[in-house]
Length: 171
Image 1 (tube, helix red, strand yellow):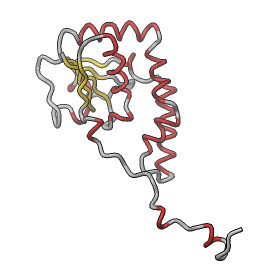
Image 2 (cartoon, rainbow, N blue to C red; image 1 turned 135 degrees about the horizontal axis):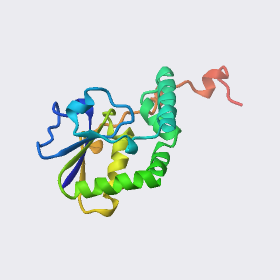
Image 3 (cartoon, one colour; image 1 turned 45 degrees about the vertical axis):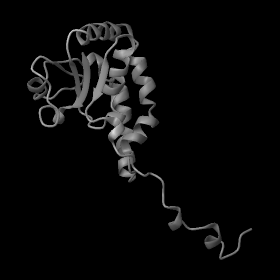
Image 4 (spheres, rainbow, N blue to C red; image 1 turned 180 degrees about the vertical axis):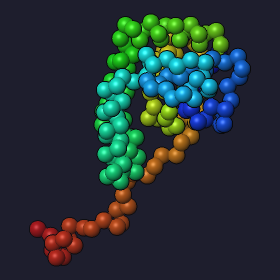
């Protein structure tokens, strides 16, 4: 069996679950169309409201500031991974995770949410947690290892030097 992850607009356009696969939304606030592309939505394994709010706040601020990858800044800035894993460690979520593990051992399962880039998405972490104790593989759509990294480093050849600011002399 395989655990797949993808985003809503990727389902049935870029990635096609088999008719026998179980397609699960894992979002806190589903839109009406979610019922048409998933078999069920499971908000218990979505990030909690406070984490979602913090992530969106930082991401929007980074975007306004012209940061090349606002999602990466927000992911690191709010310590998303640790906080989300703590959320999944709570008793209620553990019961849901156990049920999901049982389903994954019976047939292919797809975890679907809003975020296209799995590097900054809870569904990748959820897949990792689900597969800790079972022998199956995760396939992420798109594959995070095939996403080109952005060059966030500045071209140092265009940066002003200390000499230029001091009128040609350094202290």
